[in-house]
Image (cartoon, rainbow, N blue to C red; front, side, top):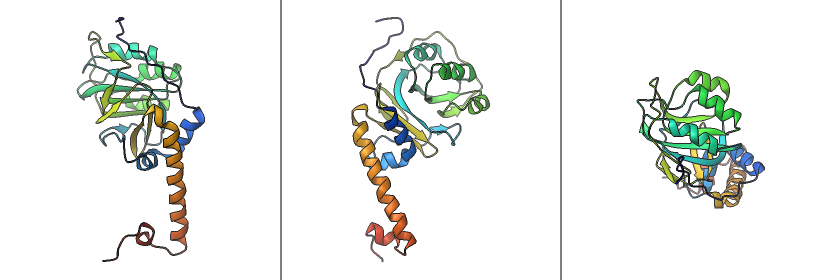
Length: 217
């Protein structure tokens, strides 16, 4: 295996219009419409809740308190990718900061999800780059321990494969398997239409009990 220990996978990137529409529908709708599957745990929060993240996963299995392989993983990622990092939930070092954010933006990445910590949060928020993280830490890292790029990882309780679709907004994060993108979009559109119908009926007097077929005790 090469120095970067990268396992390359052949995946077909979804159409950008599909990704944009999933982002518009929102993480909660996509999660509910697709069998309530793929939600990351609630401990992963957006630095800026006003930002939406959607793109294809480039994955990284990262040793705690070392960020050498983040620098290498950026070279494997490109426009529209989301870097998904399993940093083992370690919160006593920040392997990502403002310089890596600048590098990611220059490469056209769509965002970062890290099961660990970041630092330079104010600069990251000001940059407009979407970041979901488990915490913040001012502490630095070493650059000596190898990681693994583009391998299956478990982040926020969810197994993520390279090429999967990652969607995040103020409500949370959800993963859609790469081969289910079209089905996920169709199901999400149907749910959005159904909920729009519910709102119309509520405005004309229907109760939520009626709409959901729930009994009155």
